[in-house]
Amino acid sequence: SMVMSEKERRLTAIHEAGHALVGMNIPESDPVHKVTIVPRGRALGVTFFLPEADILGRTKEELEAMIANSMGGRIAEELFIGQITTGASNDIEKATEIARAMVCQYGMSQLGPLAYGKKEEQIFLGREIAQHRDFSEDTAIRIDQEVNKIVSQQYARATQILEDNREAMERLTEALLEYESLDNAQMRRVIAGLPLEGDD
Image 1: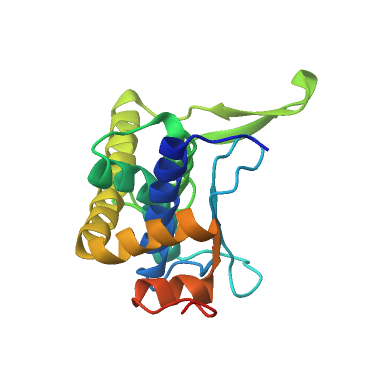
Image 2: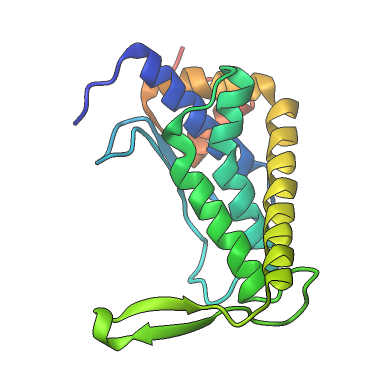
């Protein structure tokens, strides 16, 4: 496992606390199961969201919650360190993919219940899925605007949550630096300002 500097540990704790706190403040979010700043693979930390039951379909509100949760880490860096790092690149990619699927596949935008971009299997190219563009340049611009709007709205929502919960955010960051991993019950205690079990 990687050796992290104290600066990296704090940055990771702030980033992951941002994901967790946003998720815990959105009713439609999957429950935050665990948050850790122990490095795994290429990730310096991870926040685990686990649905309570098997997921067969997602509501618009649940997808929006996933986008807001994705943005929590980057926003936390901005608010609490005043810098943004490359650590959020995966999160941004995920949020953009969800928003694009909402617009192009699920009909969950102002463009209405239409599918944009037929998927084609390129059998001779190792079965890669190619996106076939079956819409005009004007529609492409409108798709981009809708994707942007969805992500921007959830970015603003996540920002508001973290600004409204600054003290809880700081407590969660410090608890992560001390314990490295917290489960849902421990996070709730920290957010409420209660000691963790076993603490004096």
